[in-house]
Amino acid sequence: LKLLLFATADKRKNTEEQICKELSILKTQSSQNNTITKTFTIEKEECNSLNAKL
Image (cartoon, rainbow, N blue to C red; front, side, top):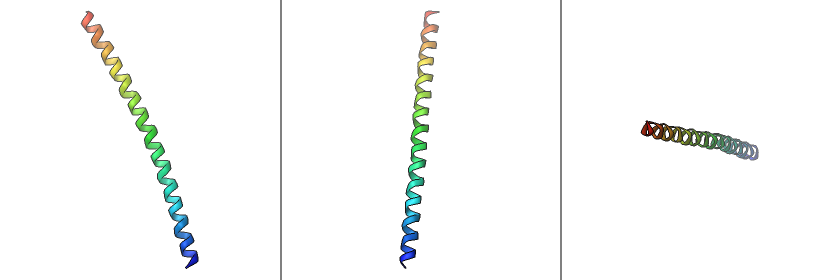
């Protein structure tokens, strides 16, 4: 029984660590997506500005 509790606690810890790693990856990807979106918006605004001048 003690061994089972240890195994369960160990499995839980591994699961928590895996979830934290995946969350970190998702946060990084989200940040990269936000940067890409901002860059695209700026480029689009610059293009619209140039078109207006023409």
